[in-house]
Length: 145
Image (cartoon, rainbow, N blue to C red):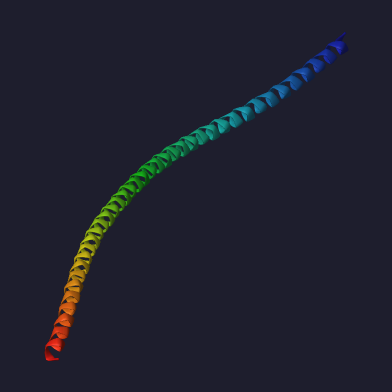
């Protein structure tokens, strides 16, 4: 039985060496996993920092856009008020000019009517004078003859 014991010892030693190599491979594999895990944590932390920075930038940009929109709305509102005021002023000036023009037209029309009435009266008077002159001329002609 001495040969069988030696074989058993060799087989046992072979299994032990195989297990030891397997254990070393597992340890190397575990070390590799730990390094990969550490690298993954670093990448994850960097990505979270970048995400926060992008979110901060987005919030700042949104606030700036809101401010600019508000400024533009105020500017447009101011321009609309100026346009409305100018339109109202223009309408008032137009009404004033129309009223003034109509008053002048009415005055001119009255003056023309008065002048026409005076002219008619003068024609009537002139016609009466012409009749009187003709009658006097006839009388004078009769008196001479």
